Length: 158
Ligand code: HEC
Image (cartoon, rainbow, N blue to C red):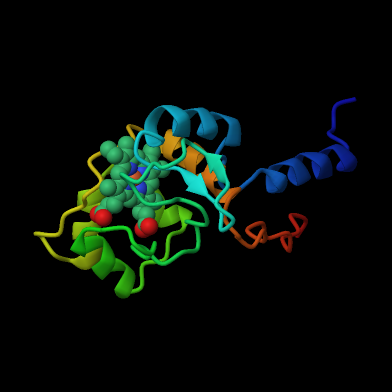
């Protein structure tokens, strides 16, 4: 048996295309949220149930539904002007924007607004991109996001 069968090749190709586009780990994200985010944030649904973090945590805005939400729009939360400006300029949170935001909120706002003096009021940074992606995967569970990121139209056999 020296040649790889067609079926084996097909299985490998399938495994490769089935590999998720981004590999955030929900469980790792939950523990990172608990240790890094819940000092300031919680996740509370529209019925007032606290789904992650502690009740009555208002240092940072509620993160329920944050993926797909316009930045800076939780009613009654006193955001910094820069985040509100970014939302009004069209920033809607998705993974690609949340990663750099979590790694360095002020730099992210400066680049997004093209405004050197922009500032974030979130005085916290996630230390590495993998952790940021894990936390985003965890938060995605509490957001209504369309689940069609995978493009299955590719056929590797030419
Ligand atoms: C020290 C407190 C603190 C910690 C810790 C913290 N945040 Fe924040 N966060 C804030 C504050 C305050 C804001 C509002 C920022 C502003 O108005 O500029 C904010 C804003 C945000 C926003 C924007 C929300 C919106 O409505 O637009 C997201 C997303 C966010 N934080 C995620 C996180 C995540 C995820 C973590 C954990 C890795 C975290 N934060 C840790 C205080 C914190």
